[in-house]
Length: 158
Image 1 (cartoon, rainbow, N blue to C red):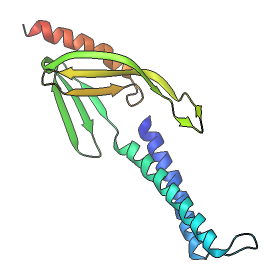
Image 2 (cartoon, rainbow, N blue to C red; image 1 turned 135 degrees about the vertical axis):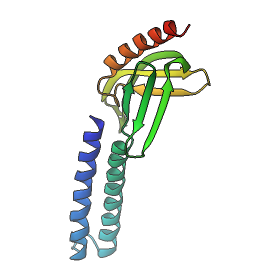
Image 3 (cartoon, rainbow, N blue to C red; image 1 turned 180 degrees about the vertical axis):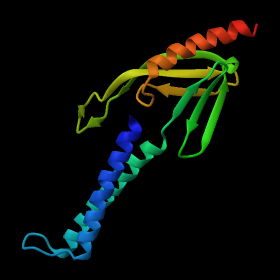
């Protein structure tokens, strides 16, 4: 789901940047209330803000994870970076779940964007892997199957 919004956001802000850039080629005009220098400052400020949101949206899409659970491994793929982490279920020490909330603070007002869960998978090597329900669409099903696979793996390899 987050890849969808990342791509849509990147395309939307990219389209606005394209339109603004093409309108700039026609030249900024001074009006009776705004001189040319102020118009340029406002233009470049707005342009920079749009570029920031475009890059932020695309970074959301690029950080997309694909999580695959097999009978003996947990595989986390980052397809746009060509990275793949393979975690053996025997290397997992603990799985801790806690509440995960996305609450941005805009002008002193807190909006509740997402309420869900986050799993912190602690490995025997001391490393931690975090998976949350905001990034993973079928989080509950994944965690249920991970607990089952972990317990089966533990009893099979005694």
